[in-house]
Length: 305
Image: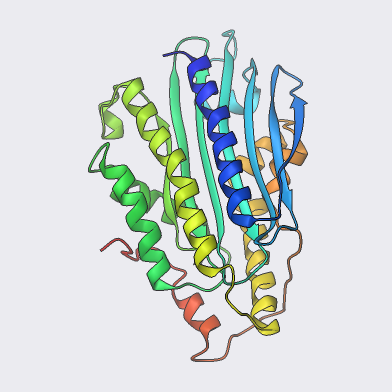
């Protein structure tokens, strides 16, 4: 299995997800922006705006190559004098819906390979409802658990905890949403990662996660697209988007690394919503749906039981 095989799958995954989102949205269409990276390779950024369900969403494919940046050498403890080159490919997705009753969703699946043969997979998928509904949270997590369990029984519990810790806003002491799964540096045949799977085995797992995105999110789009909402609920959505922005710009490693290493700014910041609000020291009314949502934005909730 070569990097070209992996790239081909990611391109096809991008195509299939875009078709599924367009079909359920009904009126929105993706527009493609092809670009080249300054160090080599490039990608296809696809954006959907002002659809019936999706206000702004992006499905990005990239395959970038070049010399390993000093910032990445430091992060990976690589020798500064060695001639390391890399290939990085993947698909990243964020969907911001029109309705506060439809959740925000994010997914990323990726593969990284060094010229010395070292390689690994990473990724994850998480859900950020503006209003947390326990039924939806359990559906989402059970779908992810089913996908993980096909490949290793330790995957879901391990990667669920990893997501709780990663998608967390320390300065607010709250999680970005209801989590999901997150994994990184999954290297083939490495017992230390707790799975000891071959490269092909890890790729099958990553494919499973990527292919789970469209059925999960299309189901949630269809379930809530016609829900009635008030202006107060719309204002709450804008405030929750503000929290999303805070996480992505202050804490998200991928965003920070991309900007620090001269990545393509438009593709990196595609994850931000079209509009977001902030209010000073807002305290939801006790017993309100907003207060109930805040009470569920914490680590360690067992949604899959």
